[in-house]
Length: 119
Length: 159
Image 1 (cartoon, chains in turn yellow, green):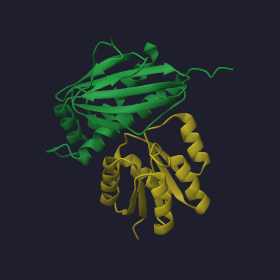
Image 2 (cartoon, rainbow over the protein chains, first blue to last red):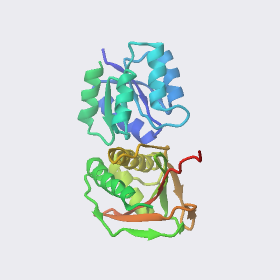
Image 3 (tube, rainbow over the protein chains, first blue to last red):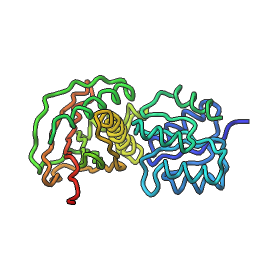
């Protein structure tokens, strides 16, 4: 069965790009969130297999959303996907339970590799 | 404003343009700009907070924005719609985000705000008391992409 993915990014362009890559490679995109609050709410209602998570977003940033999702479901698979690649950001995300950390801009193969790792 | 704050943005732009749309920018000469300057047709405004703070504005013509967005989306942009605006905003976000990694490597830990797009010429942009340094990038076949960096070291609170 196709893995069910929830995409989180405030940029419509990034949501469309990620959705195209994932659906073309056999994944099912079950939801799209434009900020951390939406992502946490959609996680609870959709129970996706994997979440992609931007960091810089309005309302609630991706690190806070990652922590809330992991508090709700300690087994949640969340992959960070952000332009912010500095070391302290990566360390904080991994310590908070992120499965992988993709730095934008990325090649489609990098996204698919992260999905395999997170599954 | 220190010139060393500017180089990370030029360096990050080159790598982002190359990875994202396979374009190698040619860097033009750095120049200073007064605190008040006139906007370009499309401007991406990105706030920077942390060890250094201020604003970075990426400016370009409508034609250049259309061409860049078309390459990012993978199909021609007929009207500069929400998807095209989002692509251009994300370009600013990627360049700023990658610049933050380079600045962190130089000892300046900073964060960025989500980008805002301002459309329309003749908008007077004021960076208050921080003068802007400008680096023009020539993108072959696409036009000029201008980076206005207006940053200063965070003032320490009085004891």
